[in-house]
Length: 294
Image 1: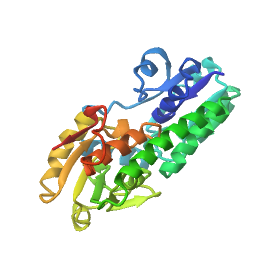
Image 2: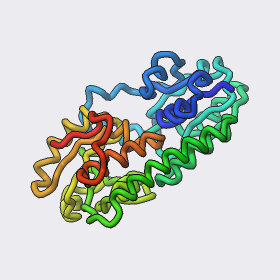
Image 3: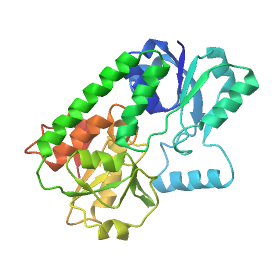
Image 4: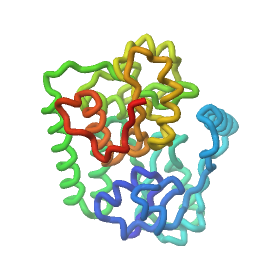
């Protein structure tokens, strides 16, 4: 089966299921594992925002959406040339990836036949369900069942380690300029790690808020996990947030690695957050470069 992934989390799922050799197309943002960027055809492009501040990125995104523009460009001819059997996409967030409707329209225009699977989880449990969806669609349901069982076993181990312990109040900042709450599955990560998510929207979209609302939630721990950034970018932004929470620990988290991409590494995120909240009960997180106390 020839697979195309139009979002980074799906690419990670494909490789976790041992289907890397079947993957022929990816997006410009697929950076994990490194082979995804090195060996595959890029069929979705977008603006390089690495030189922009969070505020500038927010202004750009809002202006494009208000004007009816597209944040991503589908290289339709390249996609057709790959002759995919299965395309993995999403309808969860226009800011995060290309919507499935655009993909289906392009396939119809090109006369290209492929199954399109949209992965749209809102909770941690639903994220695990998408792994099983991909496994079933790709013809390897036994692999996805085994992977999900292993991930659930790791979550059970964390739950046992933190059971009965006081739960620190945890605020996760998904964007800093302007500030955004934690939404979708991110509050579930905090709960699974033995914390109490505050200023959060479990199972719902992240929304813009104010620093006053974050402060009013009185967090004991603040995790700065800006969508689209790995640890270095998160750390730089966490330094600007730290002064707003003088009574809380402020940590930077590798957001793209273990928090915001709905794939198998979210369990790494739970283990990392649990080690931050309960260092005397949970083994140190691994790899050590996923979180940093600011």
